[in-house]
Image 1 (cartoon, rainbow, N blue to C red):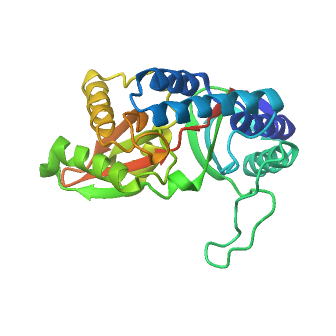
Image 2 (cartoon, rainbow, N blue to C red; image 1 turned 180 degrees about the vertical axis):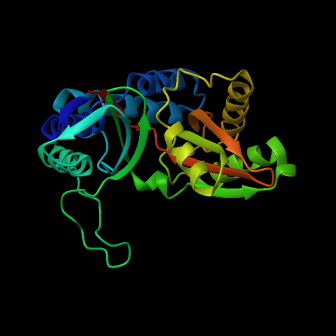
Length: 280
């Protein structure tokens, strides 16, 4: 049994929240640079160049890449041989978010109740997904998610007979209906299989896979490329002002499902697809 102090977790999450909001991941930056080279629209190319410049300024000046610093989404992989000392894991994770958003001067966007809408003023509670894994390590992924893109996401319970063409239609229709709202160029996370809630979780988790790492299964890797090609033929373009580069990437995650079902979830992320990780 290995002991990890709650204070160590708090410090780690605080840093992750700040870093995720200030420093654009290299895979996303590289994808933006590639998109700028490929974009055929002068307006689209200018927007992409501005996005790259914005990320560089944010990193240099220690400012948030985007004013919407998101709701903190945490994926936590807890080794079964880990003991948390000095406080509960949930409290430590939320305290790290609280301190990170305060220290980083990040916008507080969380309301205490979905209908009565009182701001909690510290961006907690975070949305936390736990997974028990083997070993004595604790891995924490922090993925701040803005809701301009989150609001454009969708879930569809297809019939098995709808097959891969049905899945493609759900993804393309979702992106088409989203239009300019999620601040394209976007990253599209797709979850296929499981149950209703599992598909949604898979789609969110898919957004954390680096854009330069295709699906390990060649079948799904090819499907990712097919979907990306189709999306970039929609003509939405950077900032929704037309052009070739509507999406930077499509990431698919799958899970076994019931013989009578084919759940499909699409989680859209803006060009600032933020995620930082640490293993303690």
